[in-house]
Length: 228
Image (tube, rainbow, N blue to C red; front, side):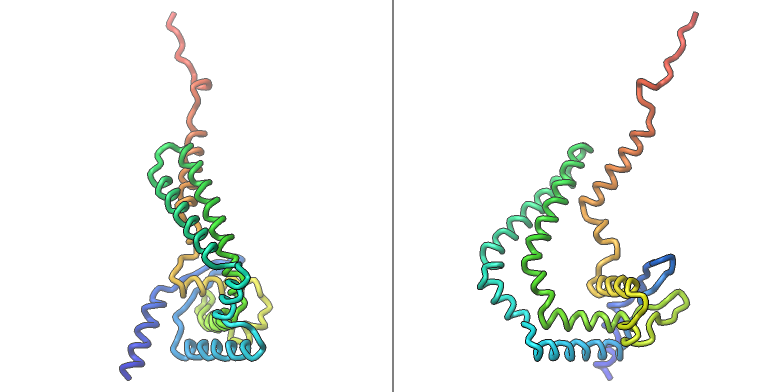
């Protein structure tokens, strides 16, 4: 009984606030996951993992060995990753300290460029890892939770079952809902990409430029008439 109460409390803490998202003019909510849904999702994880393993799909550890053997990752890859992380941190600090708008604009572009370089560098490892047993199993777990957690504005489940979710006639909604649930489980806001230092700086620059455009220029200002 104590373990069950503890499990319920942990789930309540994870899904304490209901999140929502809008698609095609309709609002959807991410509700709390009940104990049974979590257990079934874990069962789908194990089932998918075992099926993938029996089908010959590599595990995470095996894929890591393959990538290192082929020198896709390894010491050089990690050294470059750390170099990019350090450069990104340095530019973000400079961006935070910048006062001049031209300098801020330049630094925001440099931060964005470095973040993209780091993303592409990490893709050398993350792309192959997206096809290992563990990731396929995790995808199945997230999809099961999505089918049970997403509700419409009336409080009704969008999908009656996991099978209903898998055969939905609205794949776009299913993908968006899965993305929103994944972010919720990771504790990330839907607009987290809009809250990066460079995104915030760009908004500040845009507002500054709009204000500047509204201000009358010296050339167009009406000069006071001379008294006769």
